[in-house]
Image 1 (cartoon, rainbow, N blue to C red):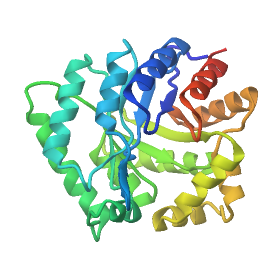
Image 2 (cartoon, rainbow, N blue to C red; image 1 turned 90 degrees about the vertical axis):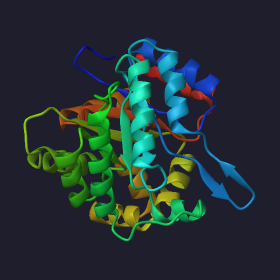
Image 3 (cartoon, helix red, strand yellow; image 1 turned 180 degrees about the horizontal axis):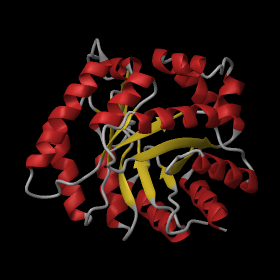
Length: 286
């Protein structure tokens, strides 16, 4: 379903590396161009959950020949900029230029679960982090051209992504909101250097999507994000931002997002097993 001028992403959350390798290979054959791995690790009272997105990206890159892969997004509040730059450059070099670094400030609730402090000004933190990260990247003697994409919800973070990174990663957006965000992003670019826009589009069983939306509504920044879109109830959130369930409607929705300027629509399976994700990929390829 993809062409030389059409990108399609896949988001894989907290899967074993062997499953990632298998799914990545199938996705590449089906025409997917990108795979992203959220920063899913957090501490619960009885255990630590979540796998490292850099390790999973390495597994996906090892199993493929053309796919781009990377964290989407790595949390800047728990990962030192220097270590992040070194890891990104190493993977970019090892994959012959297919690694991408998606990063962002995460959420106060998620950081509290890990026992980590959260910056009083996420915007200031992100600006300082990007400045140090890109300065380190530019000094490296290997893999130094890896792209840095910043996760953004509000207009100020969008403007920061436009001025200080190579792209923006968007999440939980209606087509109207995504169109406005992308217009703001490109209008804020201080130069004509190409930039990439990515949007996560969730899919899954209705109950799973509602449960996912309910979790995000507990984050203050996402509650404000939904409120700005006039998405008040959980059903409004899922109906307005998630992909339809049937194949043709799903493809139509992806095409609509491409038409408003999303460079990489990224299909995000929620609550699906590895086998179900494989069947989803085959449906989209067929």
